[in-house]
Amino acid sequence: MTDLGEMKYFLGLEIEQTDNGVLIHQKKYPKEIIKKFNMEDCKEISALMETQLKLEQIKTSEEFDSTTYRSMIGSLIYLCASRPNLACTVNMMSCYNANPSKQHAVYVKRILRYVKYSLELGIWFESRSNSELMTFSDVSYANSEKCRSKSSYYCSFGSGIFCWSSKNQTIMAQSYAEAKYIVVNLIAKQAEWSKKILTDI
Image (tube, rainbow, N blue to C red; front, top):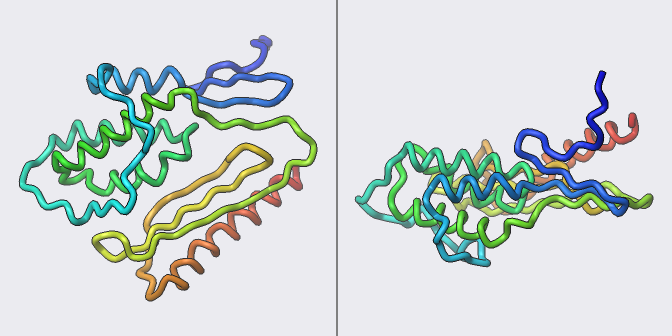
């Protein structure tokens, strides 16, 4: 066996290890995405998405090339490996892979503009002995075309997030309370599994 030293690069993920902690990011990969879709000269933007955006209300006959659209979404999904803040928005836009419009493409390019603005972001795991397992969840009630609620949650250990999810619920909730119960059930199972893993470690 050969000792390669501390890990610095793995499958597109860049790892910086210091005495204070570990930073996992992807500075090189988003630059490649921006270049791939000819957005090197685009204007950076500090807001990921418009508030109160209703994508299902977009009515347009102008279609966008679905192959290019899926390629953009696929690239952003891989970027979510170190950027959980993108997960919910990318999930929303991936729902239109089959028949995207030019307006949908505009919103995806807005994500790329935000990525260009925030190349330095990543996941920071701080070195400290009092780290605690924490979970957070949220739900948006019946906000899709099929009246499905969207569940979002993440788990953190100390300062770093190690598990996250953002997707439509598989059943149609009859109320906000029921939609909230579904996401709380999901995060409770994830937290229990994580707790057992940490106990074994």
